[in-house]
Image 1 (tube, rainbow, N blue to C red):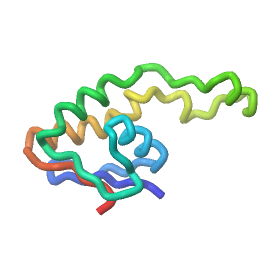
Image 2: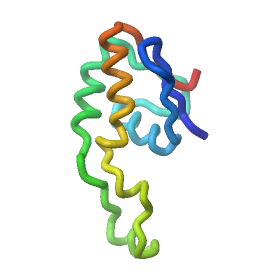
Image 3: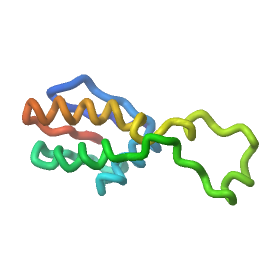
Length: 104
């Protein structure tokens, strides 16, 4: 099920739940329950998301042995690139002084 991020400062952002969960996990949050990023927490959230690797995360040798030689497309997308739409939403929300919410 997709996760929809909402803010009064930006259009809704719909993200595949696995990708949203991975990004929110880096922020110490979860996509499985409603959540919020308050304006005072946004500088830290932006620092964390903008500090994500700019290269695809490679699977361990054991995980790769269990899969075909073709790497799935989603494994080729760097975490920082995947986070970019959420970073943009957080920046706009920070400028407007409004929270970002999901699961509501």
